Amino acid sequence: MNLSLRASLALVICLPVLSWAQQNPAPPAGAAQPQVASPSSPQPSPAPPAAAEGRIHLDVVVTDKSGKPISGLELKDFTLLDNNQPAKILSFHAVDGSVQNAEPPVEVILLLDTVNLPIQETSNMRPQSTSGLMRQQAPNGLSFQAVSIARQQIVNFLLQNGGHLAQPVSLFILTSQGLDLQRQPLLDGNELAAEASQRDNKLRALTASAGIHGAIENYQFSVQMLKVIAREEAKKPGRKLLIWTGPGWPLVDSSFWGMTNADQKTLFDTIAQLSTRLREARITVYNVSPGTDVASLAYQGFLKGVTTAQKANSANLALKVLATQSGGNIFGPDNDMKAQINRCAQDASAYYTISFDPSPAAQANEYHDLKVVVGQPKLTARTRNGYYNQP
Image (cartoon, rainbow, N blue to C red; front, side, top):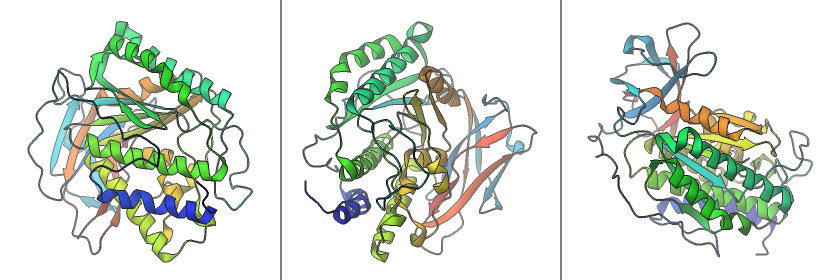
């Protein structure tokens, strides 16, 4: 597709927000619709009673210095700050994340990304050109090697403990054709590992993206697929840990583009809507990377919540930014991605759910900072760092 760079950049801004209005958004031209598998036993637990309209629910993980989740805390140990002001906690529930006690159990979603290629090299934190692209992609050989390593590490995770999984696990594969979703979450790691091995042919369907246009298309496509995941997972009760393997889509800094006010408004609405959809689906995002990746800290400049359209940047939709803001974690790159996945999955072992009613908003998409403080020394609470309120 022969588009000007400016037209391609406009698509990055516009397509994700336009597709919110579609019940079944289509992937980019030539791509297949995401495949959502039909249900199979065991069936998910019944949905909990509907919450009060506008009430916000948070899943909170409390960890010690080693990162181990801590159980046994009580309501009196927690303070919730909304825009640095104490907010009344209306409900509190300490959750033992084991399958036997959690209702419904936490779902672990392992997503194998075969679309976004590893970083080939690290340059300055700011790009050399005005494209705003913060990383380069690797050659096909290295890309296939990285994806193969990631798949094998996922299999190693599934086969540990004789294939007896602590949490129900789903396996998603992101390809250039869309999302390939495994059926209902399983506790049988052996069966899931066999399915992952059978899908090995999909890993060879990698296509190299062409320059700036290709990178922008990957960004656009990946954000859209994340929205599809949020939409589908919102139909199911309970908490979900989405563990995305690989470096994720290119970090695109739109401050280089000279966007119009209308572009900024559209981008801001997209950021607010995706944040809200992930929160409502109770999805916490994680990012793990194999050792073939190269770490970049460029995302850290975009972690603050976006308060106005004028401050919106396409980099606010980077994978690592969304993971941090959702209360998740980022691990790697290193050669033990199985251990990285285990560190993510341990967040299901013990956590707390709290709720509160936000104060009336003065305008649409009014951003609020969130912080949960634990009144015990050497403990840290991790949850969403903000939300978008509505009038």
